[in-house]
Image (cartoon, rainbow, N blue to C red; front, side, top):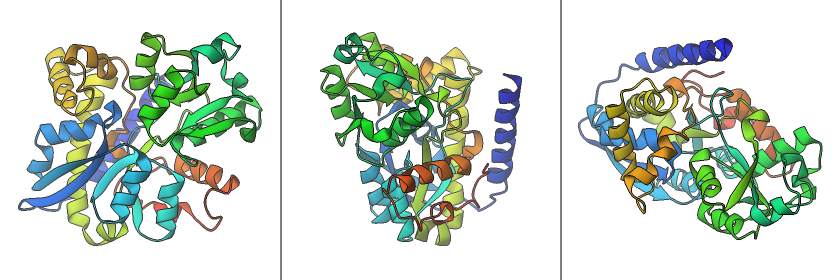
Length: 340
């Protein structure tokens, strides 16, 4: 525990140094489009927006919402949005090979000290014997697409538990909502998902917990911040300003929901801000636990685990989902934040 705490302190210090060195002046109402998914894990973006941190940097942000990671990465590559935060996928690496996108920072990550993604079984599959991750062999498993973060996590489970990845029937359902529906109705047997969604499924009896993902991959860089190669290269001051503002949102988020060092009033205020964008179909009191009880860490200072990125690339290449010629350097611009 002490070692992990020191690691967080070190990353925080590195991130502050990296972002604090960015001394570009604020812009005069520079308009940028920021892509997001309506997930509790993207709370730092909504907090930074609601608390005026982007405006403090002279950035007028227009939030654009997507339902899957691949669509968001394509939108950045096509210039429809300027920045996005999403999982690292085969699609993102393929775009990087074409020289059109760059990862510039880290975001959500697994942490052995904090409950993370939950490995789930459908009610029917559990009753038939799917009571632990090693028994996913021969079952069906939900994903958005092949090469998605869900596919990668399944591969890690298979590798650690000693069964063949191709023994599992991957079910690409495109959208998270579709996977939720399929698991709830036992159309798929298993899935792994962030606790903000997984715990709701557990609470209403739509699925059962069979494991925790951070037992398999405790340093997993779940999501990252990315932009177009053109912006990363030619709009450095704007990008530094964006990361400064977002990092302030991360600090507030971690203090309130992960480290629990913020006051109750501050945490409640932040819940209200995020609820404007996530869980809008339910009362704020019902939504609140997805933040106050189920939040995973976002890397302090937006530090990036390039070792995890490299591991994800190896999975994609080993399974012929991206070209063997792709390198981590094609995807990552390490000049903006601390890396490890």
